[in-house]
Image 1 (cartoon, helix red, strand yellow):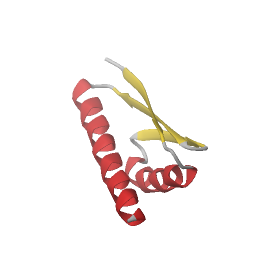
Image 2: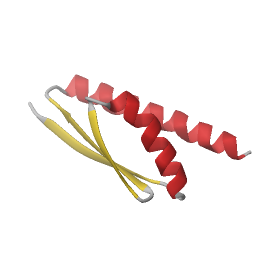
Image 3: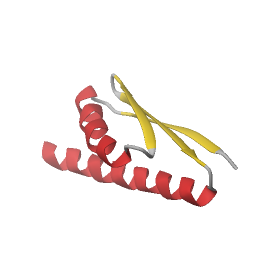
Image 4: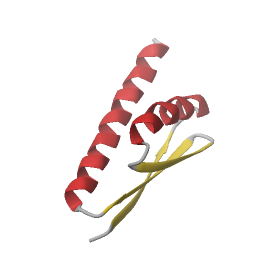
Length: 76
């Protein structure tokens, strides 16, 4: 089975997208392809098993939530 998915995250500010992109890119290298376009990060997730796909997607979303919380707390 081959599973392919695209996930796009749109930020209000380009600077926040850049911070998130650089932070997540290190952890995702080799597992998730990503591309930064202005204030949007486009993630491409491919897997040969549903379990691996779900784990990768879950990790990506959890890490994105953490990065978002850090960005928000640094503004305060």
